[in-house]
Structures are given as structure tokens and as C-alpha cells.
Amino acid sequence: MGTPVPPDWPELEDGKWYCVTEDAYTGIPGKTGCQGAIIGRTSCCCQGAPIKAYLDGGNECHWFVFLCIGHWPSPKKVIGITGPYNSKAECEGAC
Image 1 (cartoon, one colour):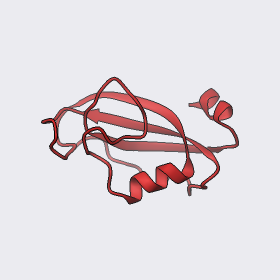
Image 2 (cartoon, rainbow, N blue to C red):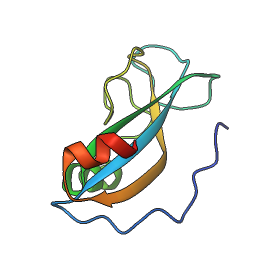
Image 3 (cartoon, helix red, strand yellow):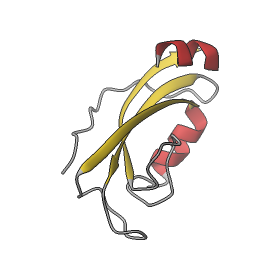
Image 4 (cartoon, rainbow, N blue to C red):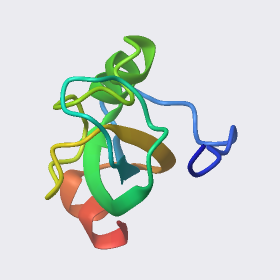
């Protein structure tokens, strides 16, 4: 359920910056999953290493575990990554 995640985002480089977009879902606090309705979308700039750790660590769709700080302390799922950018400022200008 939710937004399909495209398989074609860039190969992540540790020291480069990327614009990450996450969808936030409704759910029961403390439960894992992104089966509820989408309640919002947020984007932010992160470096490649933390993004890889987040994705490889199975952190998606867990409460209070996310890359972008948003208004919703709910389960979140990465739906897009663009970049790389050489600096945070360059990323923020494009994100």
C-alpha cells in the first residue's frame, strides 16, 4: 500500500548530498508498517552514508525513525532520492 518506490534513484556516495522525499502514514503508535493512509510528504537533504544506513538497516515504516524531520511522528517511507549534490546548500536549492 502507499506510493510505489521507484528503483532508479542514484547510487549513493557517502560524502555527497541528496534530496530525500518521504511519505508519512497513519498508524498505531509503536506498531511497524506503512499500511495506513498517507498523511503528508516531506523532503530534506541528507548525506549518502546516513541514507544507506537507514535503508540497509530496515528502518522504513517504524515510528520515530526517519531521515526527514517533519510534522508527523508516524511511520515514514522513502519514495524518492535525487542528487548527488556537492554541498548541503546546493541540495537545499534543488530540493
